[in-house]
Image 1 (cartoon, helix red, strand yellow):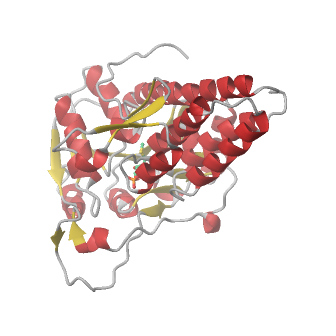
Image 2 (cartoon, rainbow, N blue to C red):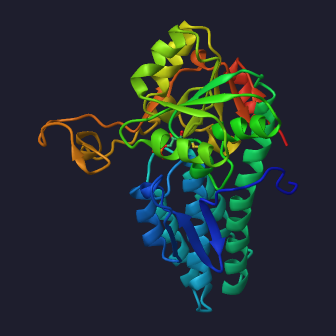
Length: 354
Ligand code: MRU
């Protein structure tokens, strides 16, 4: 793939001198705090507690965590290196269950770790590091590509609703849904964005607003329960969201609240687009096998771990993702093109495309 076509203002996860460096998204928009580590356990915890979040960013961070583990391994014994890396892969696989990119990236690395053609620790270490760096750089390229492809769908005057954060802060850079919005903006299209706050973790209010404001892209913030009314009033012309996993039949698993937005968009004949790299597409899992992560109840009881907004012992539901059926999805924007229904046939054809 070619070199970057658009400016890259935000570096969410990167490889710096044998270590993983990441922006801790928990403190945004108030503080920009970066961490560095070559300890896969530390990086696994960063994914679990959402310092690093968003499906592609999780995949890239996990791949780079394995690279850092290989980088710091100084012995000559290749079998010890293999077992160290497999332990790290297994640990990282258990961090979050829903985002497919995590499994996709770790499987790419695991293939190399298990490849018996590598006969020295030096060779294996080098190959693992190179593959992880490729995964990282490809993520940025792919986002720019899908952003450019998706920007063709955007027209002057569009008011685009997005949910959660599918931006630079959810990827290695540039973003998926926000990648489409960014590309349209850089190509001079006159657009406005509406960001939902995205309770309970507030990725929209904290992250999407921060990203777009930094680049001067017009954005208005709304609470999640305002979407239906804005659609009823004719204010929203398009919806673009990201995805944590897309199944072969077109079911889209994304941040909790996405399904409600898709339902409302359908009622009002508003196009509902999903922007995601093909590394988010899972051709092997069926709908009833998908694991929807349930997070800690305190995320709902408190706002930002600080303000208790209910009784401390109230029982809560806290599913982190929901499932949008294919008939509500107008099209899926990928780096290989725009996939339209019938998804059953078209998704496989696009994923297989070179
Ligand atoms: O719980 P999060 O913040 O990791 O959830 C993120 C989302 O749901 C995003 O929409 C999705 O990962 C796509 S990011 C390009």
